[in-house]
Length: 331
Image 1 (cartoon, rainbow, N blue to C red):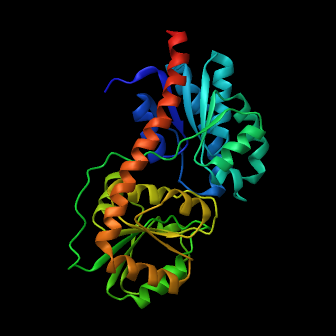
Image 2 (tube, one colour):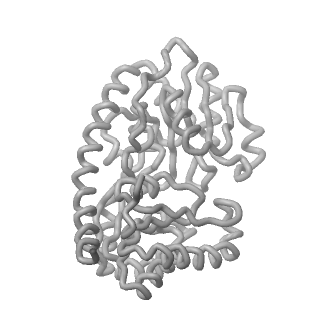
């Protein structure tokens, strides 16, 4: 497919589904810029320097008029900003919400504010963060992660063992031990826990009962196949304002969800979901209710999928018109 030479998309990761989908919708050249191992914070000071210069190099070679860039880390938008100063281009910064509230990225808030104020547009997934950008004097709009256009397949027959895909990266906000405790209470349910096990506490891995399978890091096709081959998808967080990508992916494949009862999740996912309070007892009860009323949950998530797709398309058109106005001036 021929990409528009005037648009580029940049993410500092070996792969990142949200950025890939936006790049596809914008018909943009996608640059996944990354060195060394992924999700290893101790390597950041080493790899950010070559990634910074690699970003400049690829953009100066293509010379796009608009660059869509993912934050965090904020140094990716900063490198794009430098390119824009040199070339007269504009950039759109898509800020994932943990960058705005997590302790890990808190120290970069002044840098994020500086970049946001110079962006053509800032993208965020919640109204509370759009207001934050407004307070910074930065233009912002709400665009959640788009639903990936994957093939809708029928769930596995209920006569099989009930299978749950646990979207997990062993992050600090993911309560994994309650899931393992719930698995002990549900020996007839199989839990497929995703994520790079090199990042996990070995004691946690050893504590898992036999009905828990650690899949390791699943890339692209394997990841989506795991979701489609499951009856439901679980994604838990201790953060109150994290709009979990795993939940959006569950809607994309039409599978019911087990999610943490957090404000951002209860507001956005209004059907096809069993909300739990991150305890083994609540997780167990949620899974049992979902399994016992499975057809009802499937019908709800199917309707939710249609509603969210229409809502996202309407919002995306605003961004597309803005970018096309810049490109139109450049052509």
